Length: 138
Image (cartoon, rainbow, N blue to C red; front, side, top):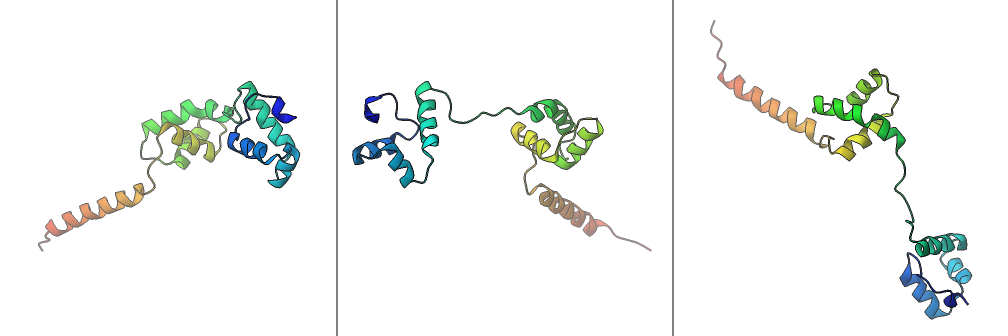
């Protein structure tokens, strides 16, 4: 009966082919995979209409703070997301640390994970280079 309907099989066309070849009803197939039948039907209906199964979701918090976060990040490229978050809060915008971090990731402005370690090694090498040259005379 279900094969008569026609239309696309949904996002899992290979599973639908397996179900039809096995001669299983949709209810039995969903029970076998421990999936609610309503979920399967919803995916099929969305595939038939051509709408996306998921996302993109609205991001009002990111959109509201993006301009200010990017401004601070570009002005101070060595700052991390926590300091930028504090400056955005100081400017009067209520935003979470996680939102600031996500904005920086979206814009490609987040510092690499090893950034501080590299800075410390460079400073150590600079210090060692100058320490060998300095001679004290008394």
